Image (cartoon, rainbow, N blue to C red; front, side, top):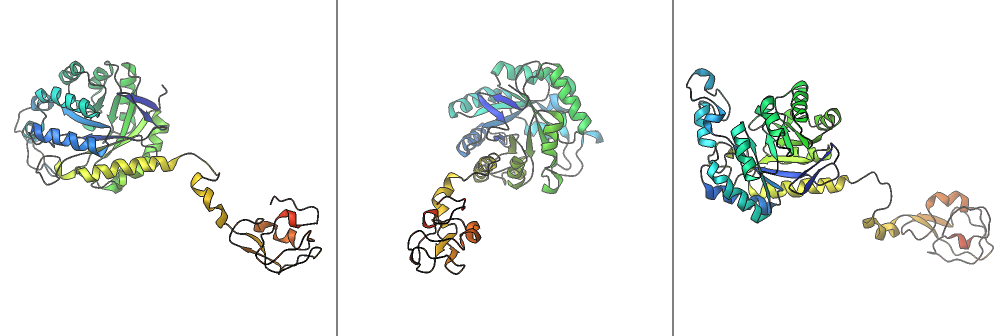
Length: 358
């Protein structure tokens, strides 16, 4: 498998395959396993390829401290302390076996973002088929190396990372044995304005880093994600919820079910439309060839007559010779009589030298 193709749970991902759509559950279960199941069910119905979770506890993510460093200032979670936020947002680890089992029954892949080594070990015991490194952890090279040691496909989100940091993350993964690697262009704003995305970065990333590339999209619509497919994104990740107004930490910038369906359809239609370089006539055009212009006689003429410029016209339909032969046909002698409305074909012409089929 080359560096521009990876495979997760039997699904090949790369430039020659439809975009891989990841529905990010994050904290949108709002503490309810039943709600988590509902999100999974709707993602499967929408046609998403994958459900992605996050595996951490408040204590593995941060310190329980009220010092100013640990208080969020501004943005969506303004005024919250980190430990309180992660305690409210985390997915209980005893849910994971049931979530993975439900996904298997629905035929949708499940994997997760681990945030420390204990989470990696836990997910390995569950048989996770792949791993995702979150944007904020893209600079945690020891974590990347530890995940890479599993030998599983690895996706790294690059929000806030500059080119040098992305290169360091890729090198860390490669040096630890990762052979299937993808990176996601990302803007770590919640939500993020489309103007911040600079999607032309995607083909540059693919060229510069030589791996599968995709988009982790935090905008509030599907436009940015669908446009990214045209620029080479092979993976699209969007946060997904049942109801944006449910009040959870990530609900407000997540897609709802109808929007996820539109994303899946739009991304795959865009991929199909890209196709390959092809100037030939397409199958959907075959029946319409008759509606192109061609040359027709517009006067009645006897055999042996010389065709004048007012005897033929370029009109629809397309059963006569192409209009490009107009000047060559004028002055030719007729082999047989013709009447008004007869298509001009080479069999009508007694003159030699017309290089045309008809």
